Image 1 (spheres, rainbow, N blue to C red):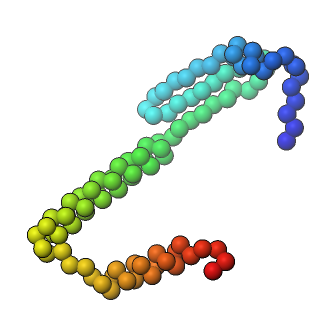
Image 2 (cartoon, rainbow, N blue to C red):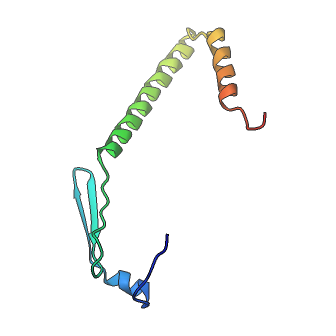
Image 3 (tube, rainbow, N blue to C red):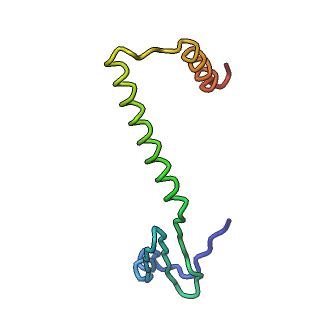
Length: 102
């Protein structure tokens, strides 16, 4: 890709003079600006970011609840480890994290 600068003046001064506009509506942002006959630049953060954030928060909440549940079981002496499931999880984890060349 070749970038041509037809105006050899300082790009810093050109960029400083560029008008830009930032709008935010329901978690969507739009940035636009023009320099001479340049096309409009635009950035949109879609609702996908909201979905990722919500899923992350839900995961944290579920994990916190599970830790509380396990803590209560352990403190009451009713926590039991399923050794078969534990060993299978350890093997699966070791296989998944196998280093290249092994």
